[in-house]
Amino acid sequence: MPLKLEDKRAIVAIVNEIASRAHSAIVAEYEGMTCEEMTHLRQKAREGGVYLRVVRNTLARRAVVDTPFESMQELLSGPVILAFSMEEPGSAARILRDFVKTNEKLVVKGIALGGKILPASEIGKVAKLPTYLEAVSMLMGVLKAPITNLVRTLAEPHTKLVRTIAAVGESKQEQ
Image 1: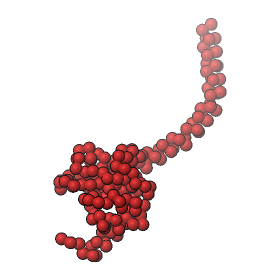
Image 2 (image 1 turned 90 degrees about the vertical axis):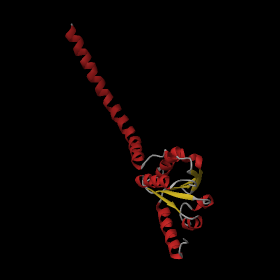
Image 3 (image 1 turned 180 degrees about the vertical axis):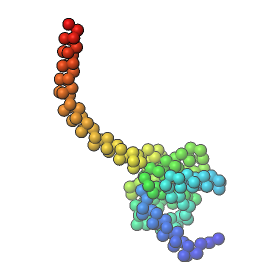
Image 4 (image 1 turned 120 degrees about the vertical axis):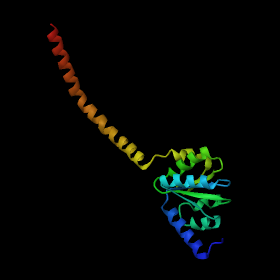
């Protein structure tokens, strides 16, 4: 059943709004997938904070205009599914990478991240990007290291003195 013009405009507006808020996007070809497999993929995407949508290519091309993913228009050919990472840049890549391991019918065509198109072979690297909490904890560790070293350095003379006095005390008790 053909879509009405209002429906097409609504789809373009929704996808454009999602794309303008997303951190990264992945275009994947889903030809040959069953309804059950697609439902399973959508369930995993929902759980991972990923917006997954099958959109006609002409509508998808219009939807990504004036968004950071405008450069992925060249990937939009054939039966494709769009996956937008809403919470963190690597979430869509993690979900699709794990799904592709069990289902060869889903083929990643490309990844859009930071306004650039990455080849499908880079999905592993994008999937390994740290989550927000992991990145914050790594930053805190880097910030904490110099302070910790300073405290150790300042405490070392006192610690040496205490160890020396303890050693002298033990040697006098032995005599």
